[in-house]
Amino acid sequence: MSEEAKTQMQEVEDSAWVSRWLVEDYGTQTNSESSSSKDALTPEGKKPKPFHILSDVVSGILRPRFSDECPQRIRSIGLACCQHDPARRPTAAQVVRMLEGAD
Image (cartoon, rainbow, N blue to C red; front, top):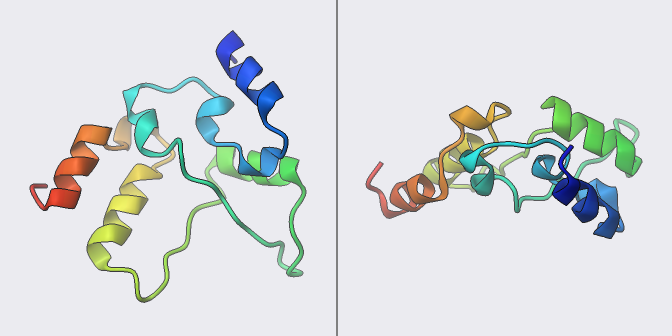
């Protein structure tokens, strides 16, 4: 973990809301996923402990869910931005083009 990431981690009070880019170093595709937060419940309906959420996000187990009302195009963009492999994520510029309907 980079020194910058360690410093950022120290500033985060609730690690349940930590994005993967704070834990591992990623390339330029990080920007399309880095601001998202994860909200989850255990199978028993309880709030999971922060380290469980962090572990599941880093390992790619915890993924966002989209409501049935979410437009397919937005769902596709969201899923693309949350690819576990950073090389498969769109850059911010690509996301803008996708939102504008160019991609």
